[in-house]
Length: 157
Image 1 (cartoon, one colour):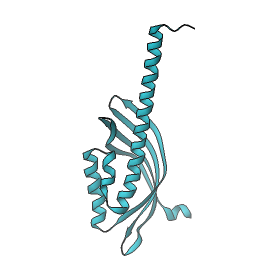
Image 2 (tube, one colour):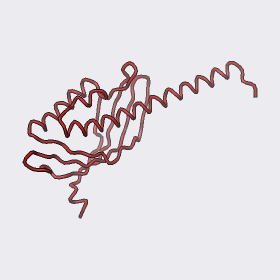
Image 3 (cartoon, helix red, strand yellow):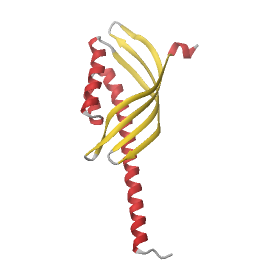
Image 4 (cartoon, one colour):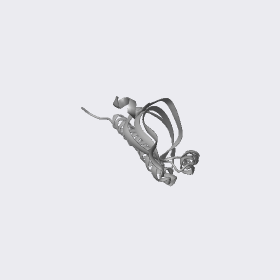
């Protein structure tokens, strides 16, 4: 088979475009993964700076306010991400919309009592909106599309 210059350019562009999309898609999913791990750390320690590399200033402020509300009541969230499934990753230019299914177990500890609020298993469907800023992706919006909580005690019975 003979490849003309036009065919070779078309193949090269297709490969480059596919590679860029694959790299972006991987980077986007990694940002969401790292953000979730950072939320676990922030909830336990109160250090909300750990989420900043993965989110816009708007989300960093919301996260800080949310976690500081617990900290003001001397509560620490102890969480474990059991499952993170990427159901959809749409990429259009410098914007991306990601839909995930997530399963978590969490409880809140207080200095006076562990499991101050009983352990819960929670199931989420979440839509993340990310934007490319220079050479990296940041989460700029988080919407809970579906949420179901079950006290862990009920699951054990």
